[in-house]
Length: 216
Image: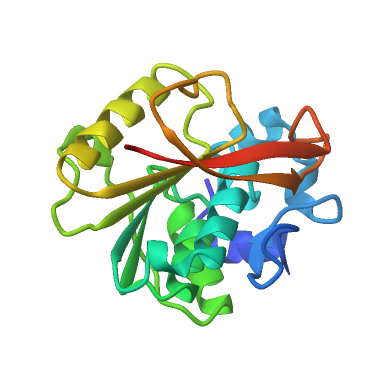
């Protein structure tokens, strides 16, 4: 097991800017960091779940870019970044003028990752590892942002149902997704499209066509 998660993140990543959000710096893994070279077997041996927090996924980058380019979407609002990972989207929301940002993720490593990344960007982002899908959407949230949440079933179905409930409560719901397998092909409002640079080590293409969508 890893006793000091913050130290582990600092030792195994480096501070860098995702290609689509050059104004934001995150502690991420890449070809020159130790975490990049760890196999699934090695990760399991040290007690580390798949480190999704160590990468800036295409859906999150597109959603963060949209928020930065359209600050009116979050300005003055209480924002939830669902499945926050590195905290990229929550950080973008705070930079765009959100009143507050809460990152949620069931992976306990995301807490220290979000704290480190928020501090690196001079913003405050709260964090919870509570499984929010086990209860109705929180009432003290105005906007829910969700990047790359449609990569597997049945999780995608649960999340989409929960987001639909949130929209019915009057909350703004935005999703960033590069058309993952379980992304709904209809019923959402298309807001923007981006060509997000990525790596063939993580994705099937070096450039992922990624869109931002709103719940109607």
